[in-house]
Image 1 (cartoon, rainbow, N blue to C red):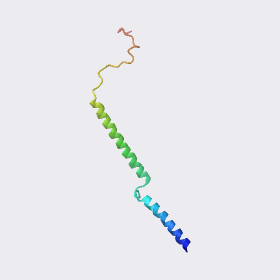
Image 2 (image 1 turned 90 degrees about the vertical axis):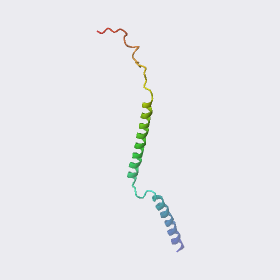
Image 3 (image 1 turned 180 degrees about the vertical axis):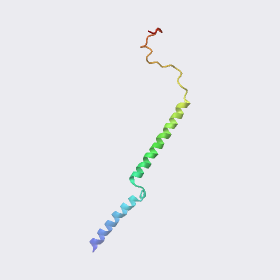
Length: 80
């Protein structure tokens, strides 16, 4: 009888732990949690992108002409 009681108590403790572990997200399935996490990450990335674009627009545009092929081209203006 004592062994049966101890086994029942051990089982009750294990079930209690499993039940407590599942209490925080019991209404949402893993796929729904994944979609919510991806949606939040997408929103954060879009917000960071928009903030960066605003910062870049505030900067003055480059006024210098950059021509990396200037040394390769011929300097004469005559065309064939």
